[in-house]
Length: 464
Image 1 (cartoon, rainbow, N blue to C red):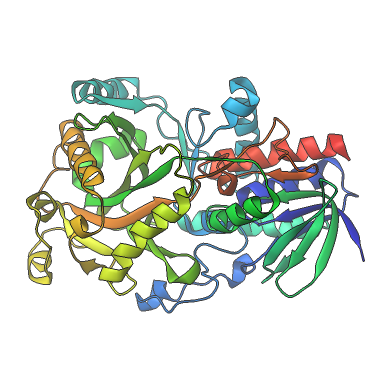
Image 2 (image 1 turned 60 degrees about the vertical axis):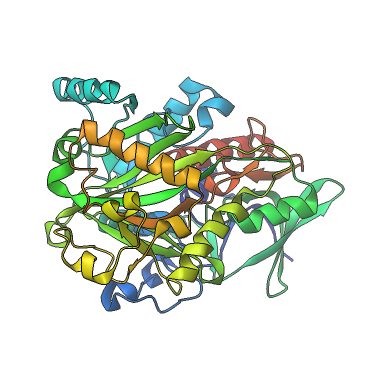
């Protein structure tokens, strides 16, 4: 049986950049990437043409080379203040340097050189003034926007580059467990019974694999903490409502602590002229997300963004991923496995949105198979209040957000709450087993995940 120097489980951004740095520094190193999804050129979602999910297994939107990043909006946050915990683990300056290095790699493989959120101090000061007036905190973060279709091309080039450098990739390969011998990671076993031995094992499973990895952690007593649960809705408005923010920041990152419960609510993943989309996880779980394209031919007249309520629980609670899934499943139950949509007018009046009222709305939903419904049958009262108070606060910054016709899609939930305890080398309490990226709750986005990959590769090279 061949023994590899490094086995990487998962081919999302953190795994890709880990492999990239390993073979860049040491071309002779043997690297195996195992991915349950498909090669990037084989990742085709039929819903983009049919507008109806046909239940592909595994889902091509969330799995395959580049992970969920392949079909995401492709926003790279160029500040360590956004997108993960790298500054806490490595220090702020080191995290900043890694972000800059990973950004250079994206540029090398074709990313747009334009950066939003810089060079417009007058406009940003005005946005900040309005935010302060509404008790919102504006988190300033330069953004490089890849675009959904351009991001796909960039990751395609990265796939071919890694293959040309000798990285071995096995797609359609589901890892079932990790092999541990006397406290040392020794390899992995796949669902079809194949075993692969490795000196270093890296779990880079992304959000889609976070729940699966949490069970691996439980079985092998890998130390974890209960992470934050981020759950909420995706908001859709006309572009005109968000125009000033879109033009000057592209993605306005605003944080609010609600007056009633003092809960943290934040905006996330803004998609100007974009479309709302559904993502499908194991067992057909449907959650909402959003995309935006570079090409003018693919742009819409609407902007969408997420409102996420961050909840931290105390003992004895220890299943944050299951909690998020449970709420999403309630929505799926009401909508026959699809995404629920409600107007903000109906949301705050406590009534179900109907097809008839939705049809007379000026705002046309971009998610065509969303089902009109009532989010109060899905969310706990506390989260309902948090969302409403956040929307009224945002209305003071960009008037029109609190319009009756604003659309709320549910449920949006981020599965990165299995927080694996790692050291500065991203090694767990099992020697030779490292956990990185969103699936380990180390990062929360493309750029820090990519930077995380570079960092762990260098740690591995020192250990080999």
